[in-house]
Amino acid sequence: MKKGFTLVELLVVIAILGILMAMMVPAAGIILNRASKARARADANVVVSVMMKYRAEYNRWPGFATNNDAQHLTDSVWVNAMCPEPGTPMLPSNPKRIVFFEPGAGALATNLPHVGSFVDSWGTPFEYQVDLDGNGEMGHPADAGQTFQAQVISWSAGPDGDHKTWDDNVPSWE
Image (cartoon, rainbow, N blue to C red; front, top):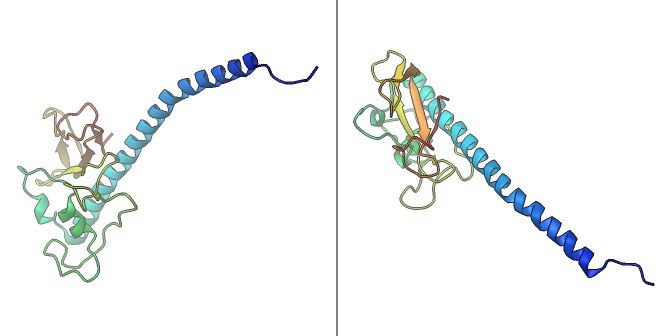
């Protein structure tokens, strides 16, 4: 009699492997979501750090960040001011042409409508606010009653891409 596996034994092994794979797929999705949020939080802190470096160098906030009524995004204007390319003309927002950060691979959007923006894991630019009155206290963008000590805050819009829905946003201050 020849030694080997029967068809039934092979089908049982394949079924067990299929069950194990089915259990791993949701876990992998959770792990990838946590990794995306961790990267977004780290990048939001990069925005805060870059803005603080700018403030330390020029002793003021960039002109495009001083309007409280506007939405401040890490768009191509922000990137060009914080990371001027060699050979570009002098910008009023960064007259010394200091490179405050160098975006890594995949950090800048290549798709419309955010081409050249510093984006989160889901392809949306970060939003930020600066402490214009200089008291070192910032209000939560969505909850007027909540304040914390900071000169700059930044947040990712999260997977839904909407900065105004806070259920999935990833803030720099948590």
